[in-house]
Image 1: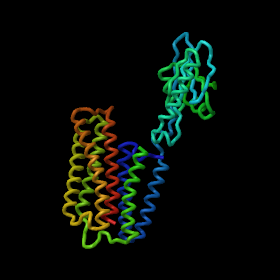
Image 2: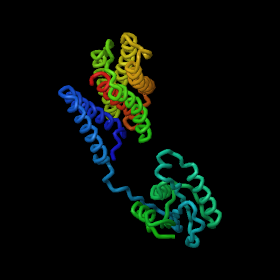
Image 3: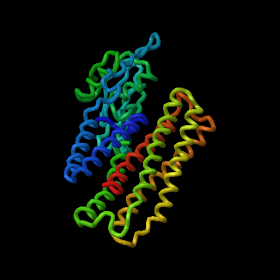
Image 4: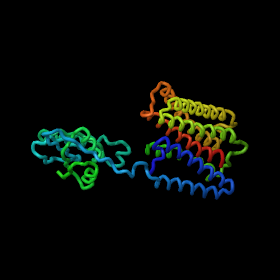
Length: 183
Length: 171
């Protein structure tokens, strides 16, 4: 669905669409009241259809694939673990960064009421950091793929281990150009 | 942004619900005799507001192309036209010949146009800050988020005026 107030240019276009719709309704209403009502119904339906069907600019483009370089002589592993994960098996001798996405429901994300979810993620991150020797853990974005992407920008990893369901695994695998496997 | 749109739709929606209830369900004549709505003045105001949207768009397009003076001129013109609209609206209130205590029709009229006027006032405040910042050189072709956001709000205010003007003054 298109957000008509996504940018100034789109808001300006919406204004002209509304002006055109209002003109049609006014003309129809002056001809006949019920014709005006019908024009209003059609205009609102057309506006709704346009908002629902107009493609969002850039949405059809494939998401960027993030790659990462690792310094020589090191093996780095990025672990993506959802809140509630108790432990993760990681390769011996590897530098490990654990990212715990602050997973939130759609309603929580929309309303910004993510403090509790972020608290859960912080607790899990702290627990995993204590349990995995030498590992560092942090809280990531509410989207696991985005959290992995963010982490890879600062932490050059050789592989990504994912703890979680198939959806999370596939989303991360599509987004990064590194070996991704299940932990 | 979706929450902002939703909250605004609910806010204006509640006032429009009252308007349609008074006018259609209760069958109150619109405008109630002997009062008359200043349609001509409102039409001029509408033209001013629509032109201000065009200058706002000009300001945004200008800064995207690196034309700082075009942006400054666009913002200043938008602010002045918005101010003209608000002053004209207040002047219209003083001369309209009815007030809030004269029944359902004037109440809804003042509430709907007043609610929109409040949005114009907020928009003018934003525009004032944007214009000052523009003249202080805060915006560039790469960094002009403040102009973009202010422009979105201004166009939204104009969209709402089209709806108010059409329903309250014309139909």
